[in-house]
Image (tube, rainbow over all chains, first blue to last red; front, side, top):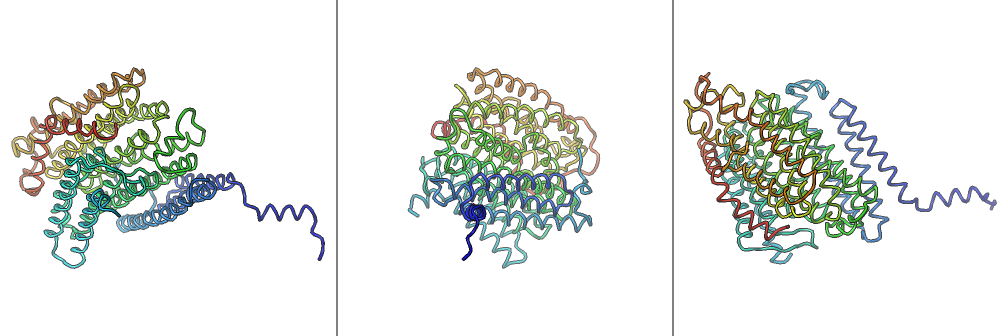
Length: 119
Length: 476
């Protein structure tokens, strides 16, 4: 059996060991930021919903990471995460129905063109 | 579940039961508006009665691992939610009959009632989020429900998009607070939020308050309000602007007072800032409106600002009075704003349709004049007591910022006079333009308008003793 080089072994150890909490939080925050940015600049209602999903998943990642690392959480956070997934699904279900209703009357889902009411 | 917990959950269990019943009526019967509307009306009245009995018997306690609390404060807001839902059902019945989807629409109203009554009893941040969503998701559908008007779906889409973004912001705030405190229970959060806050705690607080500001249509997060309320069916706009909003104010008050009393200097400053912008934005935009429904939407933004002014006074010697001010103002606003929206249902949403109403329909005109005067805050009508209590609460705080907020409240009351009294002027001095309005509107709506007019007038005698009782037994 060939000898594994020292640096390669360290790299493998780092891969299999648990990453620090901060890693998850940063990834979650980046997901949330990308989602927020997209939801603010995109004009297609369906794409906005996809961006909101990204925001919610960023939050969910943060939640699960906290639940795993906090000493007193007792796994409760993970069950909250399941409920959050269900809520996100419900929001999108109602949302797509409303977007369909808008599309049926106007033939567009571009939020800039849906402007009968102003002021 | 013990027997006690069953009793504590009585309003929620009743609304769940009637929700299922009304939905099943829609499934099994086609010509059903009479049955489903009377079931929904009985259901909201039963929720109201159960909360009233619990309040009268002095029932209180916390259940389900301290996550669900029943006290005078929570029951008082359940009364407001169920009462306003009753009038919304009366207003919805005839309209929903024309669309052919009465049971579905009434089910949505009942599920908003369920979410809002749960919300005011929650003591766990994730439970609060769940209950808010339970009340909000059906309300998107309610706003977009009127398929005969294009504005309805448009208002629903605008409300929905801002609403789901706000929900994720709120949830991120809650998750950060959970991460900082290690628990989502308000009592555990209170241990963390004392002294100097860590940056993550401040971020969590700011995100959570921004999410709530969206839900409460506080400026600068108010822009969905006018479109949603103008597009929505009148019963939806009337109910959503008073019932769930009162519940959201209640739970924000509970979070801040029970969960973060140590951080009061931080959040009272945020609330003062929000209150001042919200009052000015609401009133200045309302002045420009010709559509009465849109005007009332901006006026509801302004009234959110007045209630947030009470939140700014939650410090020093003002706490007890400020809690009572929130109790009084939400009830006062529910009565007068519900009435004004129901009059729109009878008369029409264009300012011109109010011309000469005093000659064609004196009873409705007199009620509308009462509601408008109450929204300005003329004594002894309901709105006056709300504003009076905020000023009383602001006085003993001794904070310059609170004095500025109270000053802004007085300035805004004067600012709001032209657009409320413009309606009264139209009704008194203009010639009637088109056919009279007597043919429009059902007897039930007319009856509700008169009941609400009487409640607005006698508000001081009825609600103030009740809120004093609740303020003594509840939160503060």
